[in-house]
Amino acid sequence: MEARIALETGLCFTGRLFGAPREAAGELVFHTGMTGYQEILTDPSYAGQIVLFTAPHIGNYGIQAEDYESARVQPVAVVLRDHCRRSFHRRAERGLEDLLRRDAVPALSEVDTRALTIAVREGGACRAAIGLAEPAALVARARALPAMSATDWVARVSCRTPYAVPAAAAPPEGGPAFRIAVLDFGVKRSILGRLAAEGIDCRVLPARTPAAELLAAGYEGVFLSNGPGDPATQPALVATVRALLAAELPLFGICLGHQLLARALGADTVKLPFGHHGANHPVQRLADGRVEITSQNHNYAVPAASLAATAARATHLSLNDNTVEGLELPGRPVYSVQYHPEAAPGPRDSRYLFARFRRDMAARRKRGAGRAAAAPASGPARGAAPGGER
Image (cartoon, rainbow, N blue to C red; front, side, top):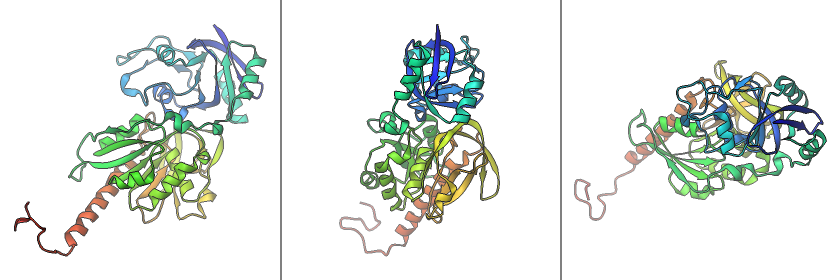
C-alpha cells in the first residue's frame, strides 16, 4: 500500500509500505554499502534509527542464520529503492520481508533514495516518520520525536545477564585461551567471533558492570564494544573505563568503545553532520601511511584537535573528514578504533587489530610468568613434598 516518509524539515517522499504494517519514527541515516543488509539491520548500533540504503537492490540474497549480528532487527524502520521479493542464494532461509514482519519493523520501497540521500547529506541526519498519514501529520510526528541523545540506547541493547563465548581455537602462542571481559554496549556477534578465533574466551557482561567487579575477576583483558547513542550522555560508562585505565590490563575498544575511551582519556566527541555508514571508507594508518578500506557505522566522532590535551595519540585518521579513526596510549596496551575491523559487512583490511589484542595479552602473561620465576624462594610451603608436589 502507498505510504510516506516525512522529515522534520518538511520534505516528504512517497513509496510502498512492506514489512510490518505500522508507523515508525526515528533518526534517518543512510548506508552506502553495496552488500551486507542483514548485518546492518541486526547491528545494535542502529537502535532508534531509520536506515536508508543507497544500494538500489535490497533483499536479493535473502536472510541466512550465520549472518545475524544480534537476535533481531535493530532499526525502527527501513527505506530502500527496490525490494527484491525473491531470494537468489542457496543459503537463504527466509526473505527480507519475512524478517521485518517477524520483528514488527516497517519498510518503505520504491522511494527516490537518491534524492532522499542528498537531502540528508546536505541537511544532516534528522528525525523522520514513516506511515500512511498525510504529510503534515507525519512531519509533526517527526518533530515531536525526542532527540537520539535523550534516550539511553545502550541500556536498551545491552545484555541483561552475562554469557560466555568460548575460544574457537587455542592461541597461536600456546597455553590456555585468554580470558577477557566484554562490556556489552551493543556488541555484534561477528566481533565476538573474531575474538574467539584468536584463542580468546569472552565473558560478555552488561554495560553497567562495575569496574571493581571486572578487576576482581582476574580477566587478562577488557574489550569495549560498539553500540548506539551519544557517548557524551554516558558519564557512568566513561567513569568505568577511567577506572579500568588505572589497571595494567590490555584494553581494546571499537566504535562506541573508542569514543568512551577517548572521553575517559580527556578528549571530546562531537556529532557528525550525517555520520559514517558504509563499507567503503578510506582510513590512513599513521604509523606507515597505509590506507585501509573500512566498514563504518557511527554518528559521533573524536575531533583530532581534542587529543592534544591528553596522553593519547591518534593512530588512524579518516581520509574523508580527518576525524580520528584510531588512538592509543603510548607505552600501554590501550587502543581503540572508530571503524569496524571485524568486517561484517566490509573489507578485511583491519583484522590485524584482533591479533594485536591477543599478542598484548600473551606478552602480559609472559611477564607475569617471568616475575613468578624470578621471585625469591622461601622454602617449601607447609604440607608440601620435597619435590614441590602436594
